Amino acid sequence: MSGFLIAVISGCLMSVQGIFNTGVSKQAGMFTTASFVQFIALLVCLAAWFITGKDGSFHELFAIERKYMLLGGALGAFITITVVKAMGH
Image 1 (cartoon, rainbow, N blue to C red):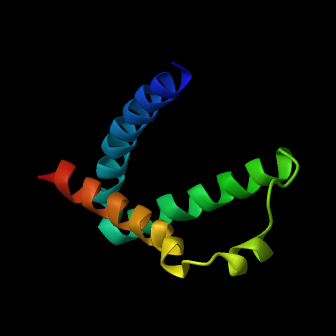
Image 2 (spheres, rainbow, N blue to C red):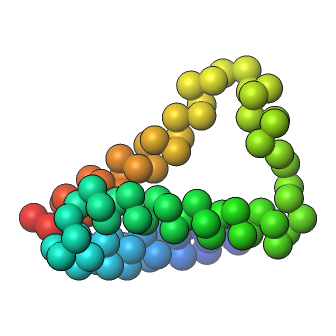
C-alpha cells in the first residue's frame, strides 16, 4: 500500500513540476530551465545523501556490471525537456 501512495505522490509532484518548469521556460528558455531543474535536483540529492548518512558511494557506480543502466540520469533530463515542451503546447 505504501508503494501505491508513494507512486500517487510522485505523479502529483511531476504534474506540478511540469507546470512550474513550463512557466520558467517561457521566460528563460527550455534548455536553460531543464539545466537548472537538473542542477537543483543534483543539489537536493547530494544534500539528502549527506543527511541520511551517505547510503552507498560513487565508487560503487564503477562496479555496476551493465553500464548502460547509468543512462537513467540522461533519461531524466529528456523527461524534463519533453514535459516542458509538451506542457508548452
